[in-house]
Image 1 (cartoon, rainbow, N blue to C red):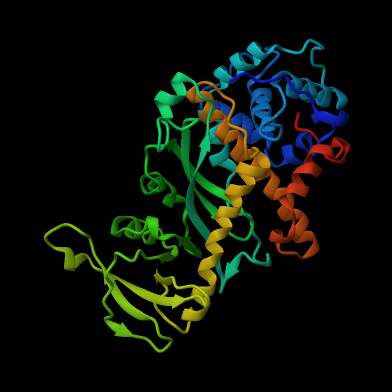
Image 2: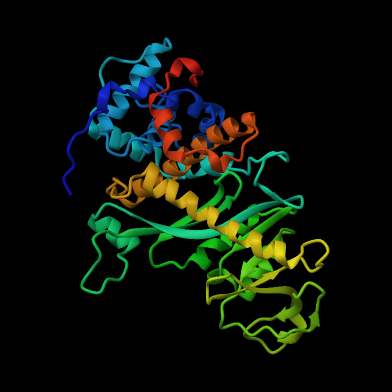
Length: 394
């Protein structure tokens, strides 16, 4: 698919954006260097495109999807020169940028995300807590990638009614803090991998004091058992195919049931007690059933849990911010090889996280819920605010 070389419209340059200032402050240079070293991608220090600069480029290009590599890099160089960095006046070519990205690889960018991604909401933050528990959500989504033979082989096409879909896709799952829309754990894979399988590696990021919300597609004995073993509390929707018999009725209309493995000779010895909350929404014929580890009604009334579950949709809002506002609704990931697709994906995750940190800080300063701040407005602000308002990394 041919691309038209684009420059930043209206004279707005990346050198004039918070991308090089406040956003960079949320990607600490010492963490960048540590992630590069850990991945064994330190490279040659006297190259024009060092590993550190290439890492910042990978993050920056996620904010300017419709701009050419060379234009983004030119503006990065100009931004650094404004702050006294003695970079060459010769801007590397697109081929040189691709070579630098190949040298960096995706493991360093993925490692950087894992080093710095964590829940960010303070105890006083609005919309982030339920009775002292930090509310987080689990869900998955997909992204279109460049239609090249190697990408097709690595990631696969989704099914279509006639022939193949237009683009191959990657699939990813994320743990998102509902109050800030910040992803603090993520896994990606090919389109053929199931979301439940991808989510297995996320549970190590759960901690006691969290309340995990998840949709019915994730509920299985194995996933439930692994998630609750972290010490986090759980509130998940149940598929209509599950049979949950009441063992004990509770005063708020909820009841205690048991879930057990679907296979094995000693299934009853491994039963797990859960509390079931069933409800419907006025005007809808659909019935909802939730299971939770919060067994005491006085600590978590059924009516509150029914209202709280719909906070799960905040993770969908996070995906929308990434796919529609940050990436662009009709834009595919531009990388032509699988490893660079992975690198670009993790760069986008870092860009989104830095953006959400900026939005959270602005909301916290005003005493607002971060949900009231427009993502579209924040991205536009990032693209036009002068870098002189914030410091650049060395």
